Length: 77
Image (cartoon, rainbow, N blue to C red; front, top):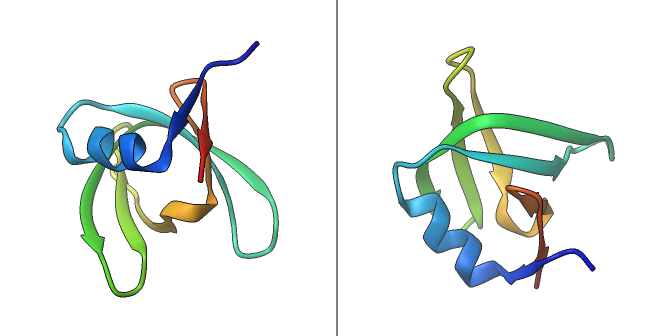
């Protein structure tokens, strides 16, 4: 059985400077794997987070609720 973590644990993990691997759902419904990335900033009112991928330097904005897994652990809401 896959390990599961709560969304509050996910938020604590993304506050740390340690790189993580994420699986997220995009606006158009695709599932996207983001490897070796760190959380930069969280907007409490919008529920969005800025993520930087360390390999490419690309910055994306994702909603916490659309993160499916972190480091292979499923995220529960």
